[in-house]
Image (cartoon, rainbow, N blue to C red; front, side):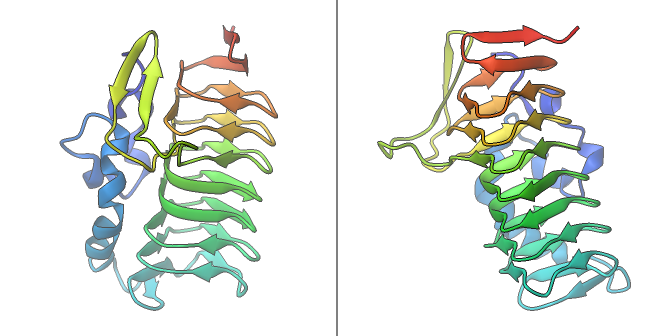
Length: 221
């Protein structure tokens, strides 16, 4: 199945978590290791650049964090990041440099690469968002199937069993998700692809595409 490997989806130079992905083929393989990675990596961060604020919580000294934000560790907030009013970070979250976590946005078990934007009423759980990925207002990752079965990644007539009950979305670099969209469990979106607003997305969406609906996915020109 094409377009679903770490190498195809992400520029690892745009995250401080590059070592987390070493030795792995698919990005969802890192999901059970995010918390432990943050806990250990956080201890190596320079105290001149990062302030430890609570148990296993490291926040860059130049990051802007609203006093109303709720942050539970393990968590790293990168340099120049912005965490806005009433953001809810539930733990196992690595927020990249220059990233934006918006008002009432909820994060849980995620890696946000540098300059990711989840700026308005988003839920992002058990997901990896690549460099400069952007989720429009109200768009969310759905990370558990309604039948509670293990998530299977499907694309091009092929299937890959992930062995995971909780799996949101893997968004490649520079993906744009339109407002009000739902990324269903096991969604993988290739780099530079645009998702139309109010979409319900599942399976693998190729890179450099425009997703209008499940039956109309066109290549960018």
